[in-house]
Length: 199
Image (cartoon, rainbow, N blue to C red):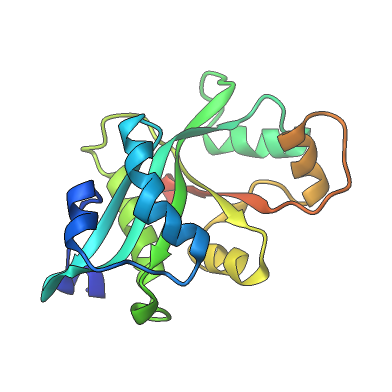
């Protein structure tokens, strides 16, 4: 059993929750601003929903939060080898131009609880939530635009996520169009195959 299951309650991050809880900080100004301000607007315009875990012994303390929205992996303009690989994961069912997934748009852990494995627990929760038979839509992949930083990429890899592209050059073409522009990407597309939950 993990810390979140044993010591926390799960709920939507609403305006009321934000107003009744202590300020949530994960040590990143951009993420903090999102959870304090933008998350409510995202929910209002149906662009994403944010959820959080609150400490049972002190419900004013948010331990972690994440935002999710519908997304997909575009198959039709992947490089040939990657396209063939992704198709093989679905046993070559009826060809689709996109494979359905859920995007983790934001994920943050309270700085007071950093380095305790909470981030990995949140990822496990999301995986289980969308692998569950109660999920209302087809959702094959959990997708993340991971900040292009070795420690963050490593964190997702340790949690079973794979790079969609083997190189930044391939991903730049996929993201920006057919013409390659030699730039360093701010984020890298990564995915987790939910069928791995059943293995």
